[in-house]
Length: 90
Image 1 (cartoon, rainbow, N blue to C red):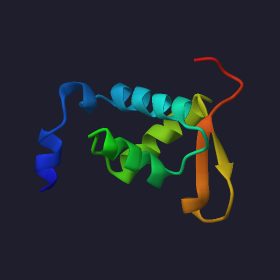
Image 2 (tube, one colour; image 1 turned 90 degrees about the vertical axis):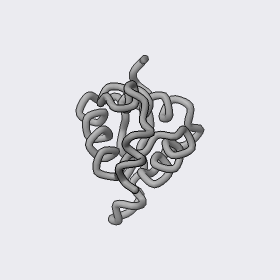
Image 3 (tube, helix red, strand yellow; image 1 turned 30 degrees about the vertical axis):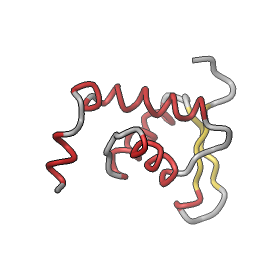
Image 4 (cartoon, rainbow, N blue to C red; image 1 turned 180 degrees about the vertical axis):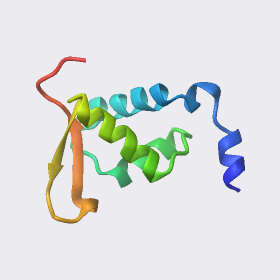
């Protein structure tokens, strides 16, 4: 079953930069900060299958480059939300 999800991806969906650009687009369009669960659901709606580890890695990359910011609303990771950095222009 897992291999079927991989074969359904188009070549552009396989690149790390493509998923990164998709995440940036999601954050730009989001009316509120997003959790990883919400991000994953949005990606699935778009037909993009990624596991949580991949999403967290891409989020870490976006955080390192200050493209997004992290909002810790609780000590539990599930309550951590992310949003586009309001101080930058993309």
